[in-house]
Structures are given as structure tokens and as C-alpha cells.
Length: 285
Image (tube, rainbow, N blue to C red; front, side):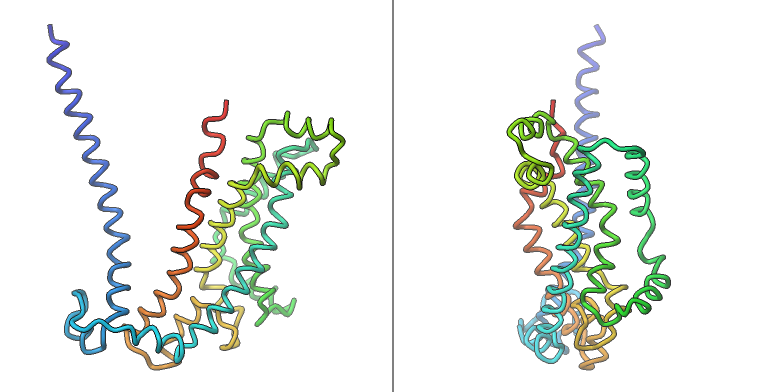
């Protein structure tokens, strides 16, 4: 007799729970969209417009801040520097992490799990806590003002996560595929290049996406390693934009927009592969 009466209560609880979750996600989204809105709107304001109304829409929209940031603020040069550093770091990371992840997943050797756990443990330590020893080591190895030196630092801090991600992905690949390659006479390197790498494409693109966003937005090491003003990356260049051109807040906002655009484009282009890489193996029998 009481069972039908409990059904509306159960539905009301489910609906209330969904509403609470939806409101939570809405609040998180607004907290992320609001700074984005402020930055984009501010970058299109004049200085008097900004002084009159710091939050609202501008009375006179302008794109002059972007041209001034690109020329006077040297954003073009900083963008090229960032592309060089990020490209080098991605190549080093892929060369180091992908074969290591494959080896940990497909080969059996003593202390395999212990070594993998030790590598992953390095990812727990924040890179910001290692600024002093890294700077000292970079000085001794003549990595100061070196694109390659900064790229090696970026890749070194990302290798633990890369090895963990790729090993987890390769472990989800059926061993029958590699056993079939052995039957066909494929060697270790042939199986890795012709079978493992193509199969791991979603996982590899996931690693590239996360690594690109990390490298592109990194600020601390770029500030301390590349001391030459002509070699600054984009994030370090934006931070020093005020000192260089005695700029205003709208000009700084325009420089920030330059740093955000590549991240948005990369995420938009690789979003589908990113979802596949993150969910790979979740439905595997």
C-alpha cells in the first residue's frame, strides 16, 4: 500500500539531485567564463573606456590593442619563441614517453611495477618546488637562454605522466594483435612502429593535447631560463609587457588573448581524439 506513495518521493529526490548537479556545473562554468569574458571585452576597450567602466561592454569597440601588442609588445616574436620551445618539448616527450610506456605494458622484466610506480611518483612533486635545483643544474649545463634547455626541462617534468598514460593505454590493447605480428615475423621495433603506434593514436593525441596546454601556458621556468628579452616565450612576454611598453590594462588583455587563442584552437581540433583517448578501454571486454 505504501509503495506507490514512495515513487513520487523517489522521483522528486532524483530530480532535486539532478538540479543540484546542474546548478553546480553551471556555477563552475560561470566562474570560468567570467574571466574569459572580462579579458576579451577588456582587450577591445580604449583606456578612457576602461577607466569609465571596467566590467561593462565598451562604448567604442577597437582592435588597436591587438596591433599595438603585436608590434610594440613583440607578441609576434614571443609567439615564434613559444612555438619553437613547445615543438622541441613535444618531440622529446613523445620520443621518451611512448616507447617507455610500450615497454612497461608489453614486456615482462624484474621490478617492472616498482619502476613504473617510481616514475609515476615523480609526477606528484610540483615543478614549482624544484626551481632552485633546476636553475642551478641548467646553469651548469649551459641551458640558460637555450630553447633546447627549456624544452628538455618541460619534457622531463612531463615524462612521468606520459609514461603512465601510454602504458595504461598499451595495456588495454589485446595481446593477440602483437602475437599476430610475431607470427608474421615482425620484430620488436616493427611491432612498435607498425602496430602499437597506429593503435595508440587516440592516447598519443591525448598526451600531445595535455602536454601542449602545459608547455604553452608554463610561466615560471620560461621566466628564469630564458633571460634574454629576445628569447622570451609568450607567457613571459605578456608578464613583462608592462615594463616594455608602459602599457595599459586593455593592452595587457590583448596580449593575454594572444596566449589563449592557440590553446582554444588545439583543444577544439583535438577534442574528439581527446575524448577517445580518455575513454579508451572503459568499455573493453
